[in-house]
Length: 241
Image (cartoon, rainbow, N blue to C red; front, side, top):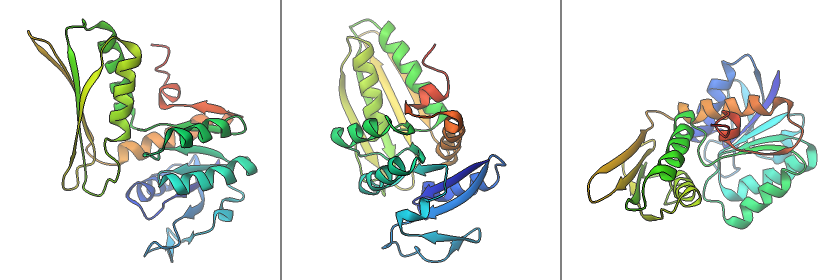
């Protein structure tokens, strides 16, 4: 059984991860972390006390992290020093911050992905295949939409899609349009357009559970790993396709 810690437990993602983990016999919730300044940082969730100090991770096997870059890096250092595995879905990280994750993966196993959704990772693979196949006459644009609370734009998923397109083909993403409206969970549309036709790949997230469930799948994937950096494509076995 995996002793699981969840960071940002009062956030939208943290609450869903904790809720679903509680129903999964593969996990025991060992620690729930929240920022000390959060208005609901006191109290309990599922009768488990909420902690505000990183030392609360002591004794956990694995930490799932969907928070801010600052909190993620603080927890990364502690996990590396104490042999705690990590699943990181935090977005808005700089190149240097991503490099810190990569270096830490030399000591502990980490799954790091801009999007933990199984469906979105299938979208990544389909986008790669389409970019490799479509003639150079196609231009490519991306449209992403999220709730008004999302701080980073473009989304990490949109950036990943653009990177996939540019790495796997002669195409360049000409435009990424970001929309922030209401409580949109997450929509991504990739448009390949030529003078003759239009090809569209489209993913619509109905609830945050798709990300939470993917994070738990990633946590199980790390159960027998000693160290190394992995992505959801590795977790889902899509890199061999």
